[in-house]
Length: 169
Image (cartoon, rainbow, N blue to C red; front, side, top):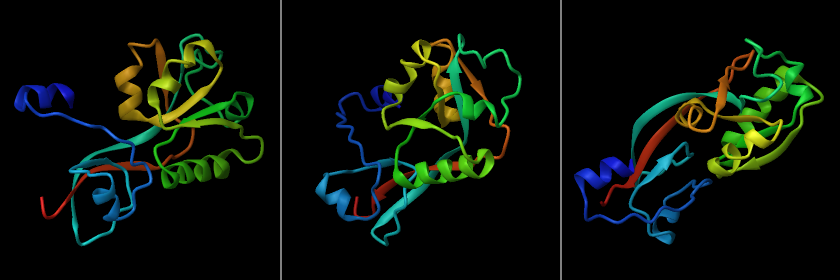
């Protein structure tokens, strides 16, 4: 995004803000927002939106993690190691947690949730966490940080990211 903006609009400035739990038009005015990109629950006649991309939810772990050598993770694997969830909003977190709980049952340990991807990703190599995030993010950082991306052994939700803006703009 930054590369595209700097090439096509070199004199523009960005002020990036977290709006993880935005649900209505008021946040655009309060935060002085022009554009929002995310997986949000906004339903307002004053806001337009456009699909950007769709991604699934995956596991990310260090190449040194004991599970890295396994081709396929099992339900029991999710009970053995703590989970670290990159979570951008409550609804997303709840969808993923509910899906995990239904599949794995008792014994699931989500020890940390953070909306800051880099905080999670940069700590995986020094931990035994299984990180839960979207594939698009995982794929973009896995090689740079020596991480492995693995699919869940059960169906996880698909996430639809959109771009939102005020209709008056």
